Image (cartoon, rainbow, N blue to C red; front, side):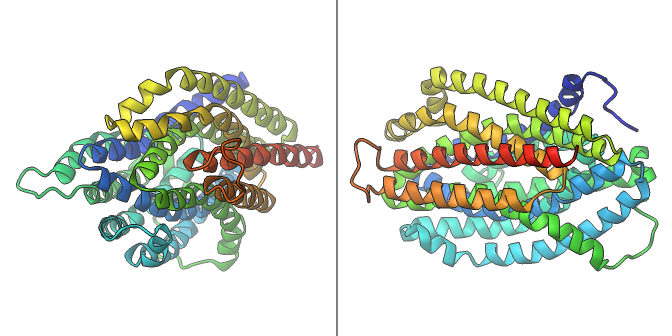
Length: 453
């Protein structure tokens, strides 16, 4: 059943990382397509999309992060050869997904308190509200699909997830075109059309994923079905929550740093927030590189820990970090030289281009530090260590990142132009926070590995 047949560690990581990368790029491409297509509909819709996406992604990523607790549990059980125990954990994960869905949908259906932070004009507020309410239709399917994705990645089968994600992207493009601009007898919805297209593709993805679980021979040893109705098992739920809540919070902290950046930058006007959205969107695309390597290395570290081989776990984790750092450095240089072409591929609007280009100067350093911290955090999760990394994220990304970003962005300190103000000021603070997070996470990972010797 093990798909990691190549014996060299680099090949093992690569065999798992490339399907994760393609699948995640397909997911992120949905956001790129939404941004690019909406920018061609109107700048007002693009600004509303930026605000609404920041809120939705915070909820989506936070809930998905809690459910990702299934991955290190299933990965260690897989390494130990306890296949039927994995099925029991998956069934408990479904109950947790239902609970998270109820909370998330309530926030999406009644988003006024969060939208108030943006102090947006009424037209932006109305469009963002419609977008978020439509995304409430997508959330149950998104969390259900996360159960399938966490299981498949944990047992070294990410290609199944990738195939569904790529197929969903292929369907998203024509749906977006019809729902944003109108066609086939349907009226033009603008930015909110992206949300309806997302809901349709996510429900189809969920059906495909659960069909694989039900009928693919590969998943049969886990005994996912045929056990009858099983209610919540509270000790298992506590284990999932003990790991998942800090993981969900860490994801939420990461994403909410961008969320509040967007909400604060929205006070500077439509052009400023649109330029930030283009920059943040591309940073998210780049993040998929270290994410895929970190996720692959984390899976292999969990397998080694489950098998009782702590030395192999340490070697695999360290190699994953080195790979992620090297690739991130090369990507950062490429972005620096190609940034004018990248920005113009997003939007033809000269005003938005003028705002976005200076922000791209931060991407190289930001991405390198982001790669280090992301990979270290993923490997710590394989060790089932989640609380301390979450505290590090809170102090660095919220305290240093948002705190200094607010001070610089609105020039509260009066240090401009020595430290840039406006959207660039927020990016100065955010880059510093990711650098510090990387330093502390790498140090803590080394201490965990030393204790496991």
